[in-house]
Image (cartoon, rainbow, N blue to C red):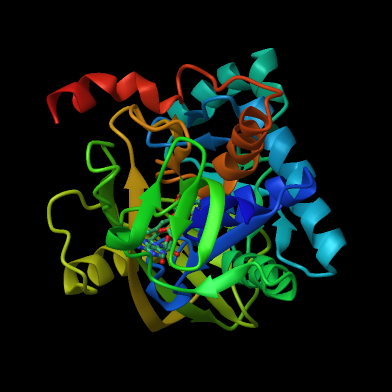
Length: 350
Ligand SMILES: Cc1cc2nc3c(=O)[nH]c(=O)nc-3n(C[C@H](O)[C@H](O)[C@H](O)COP(=O)(O)OP(=O)(O)OC[C@H]3O[C@@H](n4cnc5c(N)ncnc54)[C@H](O)[C@@H]3O)c2cc1C
């Protein structure tokens, strides 16, 4: 008997398993790692100023404090390396944009994240930045496959991981006990990303397809360049370029259109010659209001969900896995804006 049966070991399931173990809880995690189509595809970028409008991300101070504590703590405990803080550079396209950023940077809430505003080209040997650009602090990337593998190795050592594709027909649950195959637990937590389950069929998780390129560069970029696409370091001289955002065509294949879009944007951003060596696709688990979904099922208090990490799993998962673990262990409430019960109108219709 364990305390929690966790289904899914992407960013959500991995962070949550870690948080629960830290609180002295026993977990059993189920997944078939080769089936992951989100966390394993992610470039792993974290950046507090995002979006087309380049605004401070929701809860930026809280989330970034949490992630800067969380990943190094896991690294240290497991003696692994997957957290790479690094400044990010966004070239300006006009003098008007320079001036706008001068204004934003004077606002105290933005100062924490803005390192420097350049009004002339500084990285012109590597990127198109005739009008200078913005250097953003508290950015970087997590090597997500290494992070997931590190957590999985820990779970395997504790006999707490099984390669099993969860089959709902074999689940039995009462208000106090979960029984699935030979496992028994007090509660079950679904961290299944875009995979649909019957129990959670009314949870509005919508797939948002994304494609990335892997490119080879002969010269190392001085920081993370980001305009139209991001260029995030990978192994040796390989870099991840991403990403596309596709809500309509959710075909589970790479496309020529995405390759063209990403390659064009890379040429517009980089001065450096590049060679495309790979292309990949994935599905982000998004929610209608772009906030995560945490909490229990409307009909069963021991059937829990942690989902909806959308485009920002790396920065959302540390803080909200801690919040969920604290709620499960009775020491915190779930923020109303992320509580799954905000969608209860959908359940009453199903
Ligand atoms: C192209 C692309 C680029 C991205 N880039 C970034 C980025 O740079 N920065 C960032 O923060 N975010 C990025 N994201 C988003 C990020 O990947 C997601 O927010 C995050 O991965 C979601 O994690 P998750 O654990 O909820 O879902 P997933 O990673 O999908 O994990 C769900 C897990 O559940 C398992 N599972 C599902 N059903 C079952 C079942 N029945 N039985 C057993 N196991 C099951 C799956 O195998 C999977 O491992 C990107 C996403 C994509 C697609």
